[in-house]
Length: 450
Ligand code: HSE
Image 1: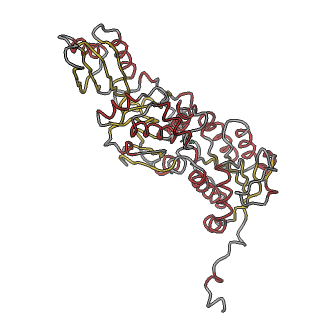
Image 2 (image 1 turned 30 degrees about the vertical axis):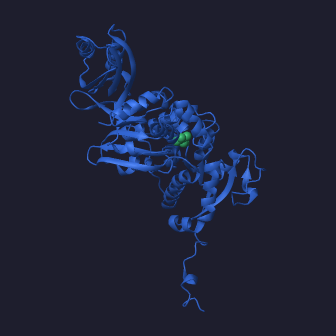
Image 3 (image 1 turned 45 degrees about the horizontal axis):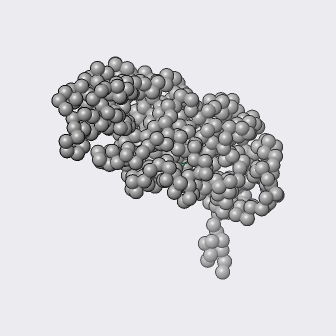
């Protein structure tokens, strides 16, 4: 058979394409998946980029350790990350943490490499330093994998929606906590028991602090808010509350109002009385959200980011927020993008922080509260409770009373407020706690999504 009869022989070859040298820092769950994809998809990636992506080394702590799941020449493993990054065109950083990742990224950029990183902690702590180095050296800094794993959300925020005005971002950006809250909702079990179950199934780490205390989500919130509002937001600016205090009673209270409890990363534009943007509110906390809201349907360990923009309206980005292959999908997308830029002789978007809005205190954030009270059931109690709200300028949206058994003159009151500053809502809860007709503020939780 001749090549005229066999089209496969006529297929364009990628062997003659130029080469871009790729260094990989880290070979854990994500790094090994990235290495596999670079090797297994080499021809397709070369065709998509217009250059072959040659893996020149993988920096690991123990280069001699056998890694049968990573199909590369074992001589590519090195403990000398510093030398490796100096000879690369593209550096992929999936080590995580602040140091040595920061130094390696800065060294890579100084030596002319574009950087693709999944490092949310570093970006949320010191993103401007990385951006400044990228700008100084004319290279790319891409980080799609840093927020919500496989879900394309960084590029939509940085590029697709950059012509619009983002008003609010509500994200379920931590799969572990979503798994725990979802199981608490479906089983009625408590927090501790559900975390144990999540650990035994491999959804939660042995030390789940970063997830359940909201640190992981707070880093992602800082990155999303910076992009959404063209303002530098660091993790220290993010108000953070985790899910450790969420009880089975809170979950049931949410069920009673046809809502679910989610750990939300909330980034909101704050406007002054004239409607002009005057600040940003960035916070992570558990909140009730109506079952009719699209985020309520995000089950198990899935992530989703709900964006409200002036012209686009409401958008939701949904998918897997963690795991080797899903995260690698985001990393490889970035690698192809920065490789294309290098071939074309340019770079992608740089930092956009021109709006420079202040980050407002949690007290100034506006939200709604769901408050559950145990009260005396006698004349004047409702009036006294209502006046505590009025005195703090908080408007009540709904009140539901249930008498607790016959003859004991106790009742349960469930109150949902309209939007008000968080400081006024918190002060109202304090005032309610001090009323002699209120036996207990049984629970309170913010309500979001409306
Ligand atoms: N631990 C995170 C989660 C994934 O549970 O979603 C990495 O950010």
